[in-house]
Image 1 (cartoon, helix red, strand yellow):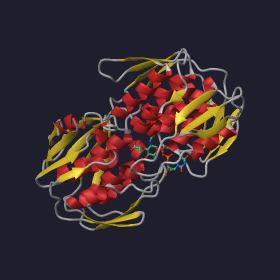
Image 2 (spheres, rainbow, N blue to C red):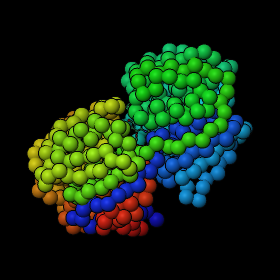
Image 3 (cartoon, rainbow, N blue to C red):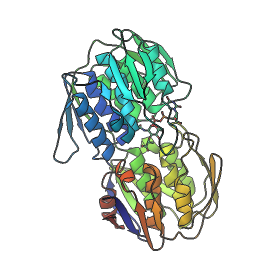
Image 4 (cartoon, rainbow, N blue to C red):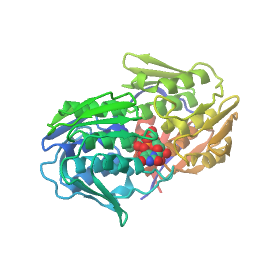
Length: 422
Ligand code: EPZ
């Protein structure tokens, strides 16, 4: 049965919300099990559809997996691989499956990963992942819809210069290089907080990586890695999403465990728009400083710029501003699918190429709307929370990929929301 979320708008979100572990760190962190024969235990793992999908793929490859009753602690051990193929059925459900490519080649000398297609937000190339593996000495061919990679022996350290910063491309390269012979330097590496966090995990397994968090990362290859335990950092995108939800509904929310330092650019923009996001002992306190929301222009950019994963949510907020804001999406070529759905709720948005011009309206009206990707979907939930009347967001599975128990968490903050089967 397909599920939807029914929202009766006009209620402020107040109180506190527990921010879960970061999806975009949990995914590469789980994959590190392929780099060692010893046990890796991860805590604060978010209970998400994408995590379950990746665990399914790792189990298919031969990883033994133990999951705690609350789903937040996962212990993985890959003593021997059963397979080095990541089949189409797994990869089509979740592009991040591409992250098994580097570790499989690094430790097992070969991998065959179904070529991840594009997705709703864009073509999502992986040419840079392939370039990095070839520079490290792997032979990589694209055959029958699969990326077939093979290394004649141990990979060899190399200089990898990315034309654009790629998050999973940087992660794949790091995980391929940790067991290589010699030193690898990644230039124009991604700097998203999930990269230094992944490196902390890998260094805790015996890797020798420096420069993480900057655009130049150096990896001295080692013979092998050992097991470890590691706590996943809080999800900055989930936290930013709830900050917008609080602002859109004139509520006041404590984002528990949120790391204020991971969202500086975003919080600066919110502050200029009239939304305070104050660091507190147990997270971040988000609330509207005044009744009026100022329209503030943004351009998405690689970290530390404005996160593309918060663009849709921010657009929902700007739909209620007192002015006109321009929102330019520089990372993905098709990340405006929320626009027609927000317009059906009464928003006034016009798209000109990579830029959406958002003219604030006094109110939004509830409607039946369609979700298309994780972040577009949640922007419709935010609009529904602020709108007058009832909103039903269909295809809830998009949201469940990236937000743990979103309906329960929002109800706990006073929202009138319920999950319904249609
Ligand atoms: C990661 O995707 C995140 N996913 C995305 O989050 C996030 O939007 C994105 O980084 C940007 O921050 C995970 O970490 C699992 P990129 P990734 O490689 O690594 C192009 C969410 O909602 N590119 O940094 O796939 C690419 O097409 C998801 O949680 C190439 O052309 O993004 C894009 O335009 C959505 N060739 C740009 O670079 C390549 O080889 C940045 O992509 C690689 C990327």
